[in-house]
Length: 295
Image 1 (cartoon, rainbow, N blue to C red):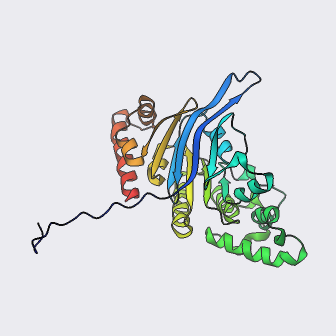
Image 2 (image 1 turned 90 degrees about the horizontal axis):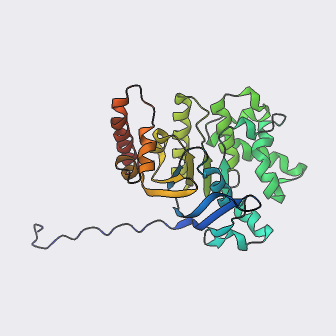
Image 3 (image 1 turned 120 degrees about the horizontal axis):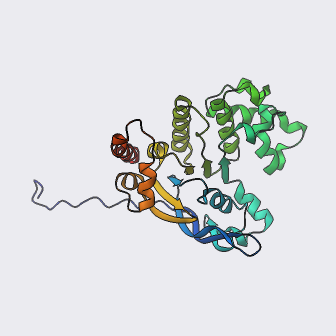
């Protein structure tokens, strides 16, 4: 009862964010007799402005799933819908326009760059591919200006444009990759193990950058990883994948604190620690970190 004699009412719960990516009954089979099922009946929603972590061991189907949702593979069954549009129903031109809004940052930035290309050409590549106005001699000055803006947005000096990938550290190259992914103003970034090739100190700076960009640009992240310590820092929700199927999906703090599926528990127990007796406490700290990040 409040001081004026009225009964206080609780604040209404915030409406869930709109779904930007929807996977419905997705299945992918390989082989002439379809004997190899890489993705099996996967249904999953990704909401705008959230970070959804897709976790699982190598070979569990994570890579195949990301290729399906990016439209790089055709599903055997099921559908992928981006902003309500079924990718399978789109023409090549329509799919090309959709791909502007879905970009990817890969695990090894060096292998995703042409070592003979300068940084300015690497970052401008999506512009040249998707924007006719970015082609030709007259557009070069405008492209360099845009590349400079993108480099500065990821914490690099615009003056590095004429240098080559081998002149930079792994962390700097990953920042260049992120700049390239942002060139077309995407809404969704698929981050495929974006920090696993970096040392812990550099890893932390890249994760901080991704958090800042998400906040400033309103990005949605699908964060593919096997590193639960990293997932605890960045994820709002977690989807756990095993043998081509989703076995557990939930809020990151809840999944890391109290996993419901035996496979998820095994993943948490496998997190390396110097003292095995500290393993459970490490998982609890990870869950606490995820909870703090979500608030």
